[in-house]
Image (cartoon, rainbow, N blue to C red; front, side, top):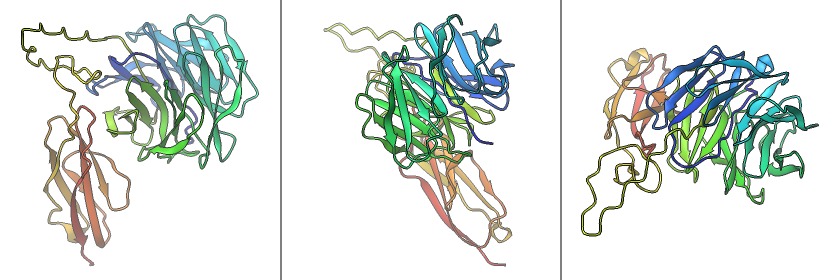
Length: 397
């Protein structure tokens, strides 16, 4: 099916507690700790039909029910599910919140707005658009992607009151279906899921000028459906592999399998700020710094325990390959990483890299020469830049 919905943006500080995603085929919201651990695919269950975007603030989680023409809401602990928080929103396609308001886009051509308590609904804050898909906010503007314009595609924006419209604001050459927008002070980011899925790219342009559009800022995504920026990091939902990906906002340290969600066509991602670990106290001038206590802090070049941020990628090693059943078209690979807790992505020949675990088995291989590659990514999001590889040949019958 076509992926026609997208996620949210939450502009916030650099420390966070949880990452959330919408599971469009299972009608639920998942959640994990922002270090990728503690995955809970059933954090909120019983959301409306085709739950396909998510946003979060300090007190609530919000989502769109695309086939239910409504916006839902629950308390931040997952209780009090209300699928009819805002109704009559025809074909919603994106969602974002700020300190006072909730904004949404619809494939019918509108940008809507309401107060955070669901009152003051204005379904036509901006109207007459060409299928806006995704919505994002900064301190002065609301942004959305246009998906009905063909190639090139566009990112539009307007003031938070719907005035001062810039249609288009960003022109994206060579792109026909951007569906997901996020923004920070420097850049506008978008995801490109493709009209019927299969998209692989994350794009970027300058926030202040709308220029410098780079449709291939990050590649190797898998139907990226929803994007969010949070402090120094960028997140997107891979509907093709049902993972949440993460990278630095400069495009480095890409981890396409940061969270393995256990969902089905995940489409939407948001990050909260429930817990902001305090800065470690400065040691007295007379004394040495306290010993590293570990911890998961991500900002300022230090972990919350005072140690340096892990920026060293793991080393990937193939332990055993390709096995003894090549004549039957079968191959098996065992591999490991130099850092415990690492995840892996595997690639065989010209196929796309996909998340994998050891051992990785292939069957039904046709006669010919092959190259197997595997990358490790550690818990801090550092990816091995040089995959381990093995060449092998399936003999002719």
